[in-house]
Length: 270
Image (tube, rainbow, N blue to C red; front, side):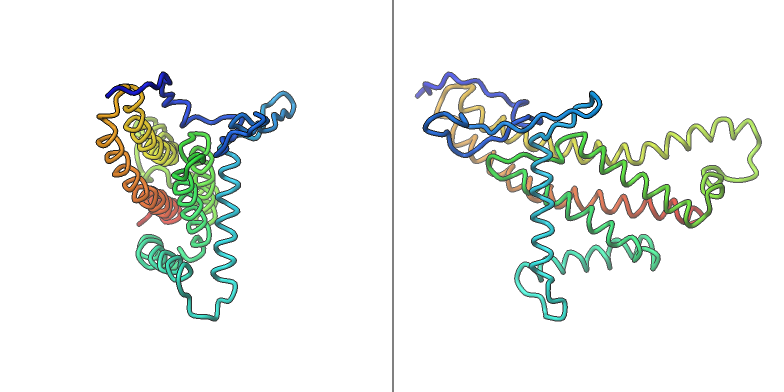
């Protein structure tokens, strides 16, 4: 049985950023026509318009703040339900990631690392909801997260070793000048490669899963046949569940590598 749909599947359009929000209905008078246009803003000729991914980050941040405030507004009480689940994650990250990697000095960085983890996690999971978008599937977002991490990495090195001591630790002491000419550029490239890897890893993993889900569902329209619908839906549902797991994994990996890189900069002798 062939489908009568003539629509084409715009895979890239579903994952790119837009200047409008999709709404789960089309207004009867076509006021919205299925979309809500977002304001276009410019500052000194620079486009600072509010886009769909910006709105998704705002919503994810608001949900994160609301969740934490509602779950832990009474810290003296024994947590239950969602609060117990979130506290389990916090304790796991503290006792199994931050402290083993960074030692007791890692407690100072725990608020930053937990904020990074939960913000990425909320953005990853929120993007799986219908009519939403995954902000972490935007390379500009992951680049901004990587840039913040880069600043924290360099700041921890400077605070613990001094400004000149931090940059001096880029290469081992006592090396002959010809080797320094080679090693210094290599170390600088390696220093920049760490946040670059964080940026690309998170972006690529989040966008790849969404493309796969859209492609499997779009096969029904592209092949114009209902016979492929059961297999497409089953595969898409399996990938959807996998994406939930990947959302947690990618937030964990970003946090783990950040803790590792910060500790390497703060304690280069280890």
